[in-house]
Image (cartoon, rainbow, N blue to C red; front, side, top):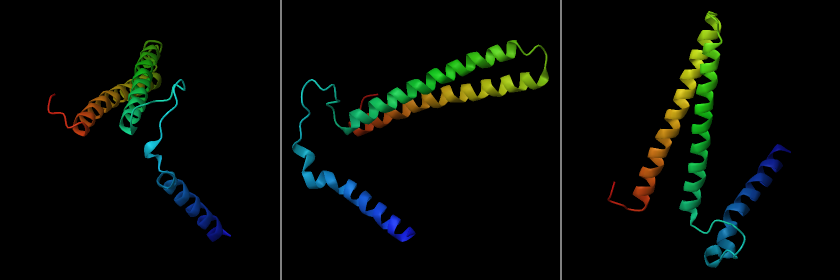
Length: 118
């Protein structure tokens, strides 16, 4: 039974991966008025990554504000102070990861476009 399920999953995966080549999707045009992205795969991936990095950055800043509130309301309790410090550290790491992601995304975009300007 397990082998049949694995064979079915493999067949479906192979069919899904080979479908674009079978239908010759190179000549397909997007109809007007659908609000679908018209750029290539690179532009779509870059816009998704930019959106995700913005979300991570916003959550990092919100987490930092919440950690600051936790720190201010700890009233000298050592466990709450440590919890607030850890939350601040994690939110700072989140913001740094988002900023590094933006830098890496821009560098990859410049490399893929064969751009020589910085």
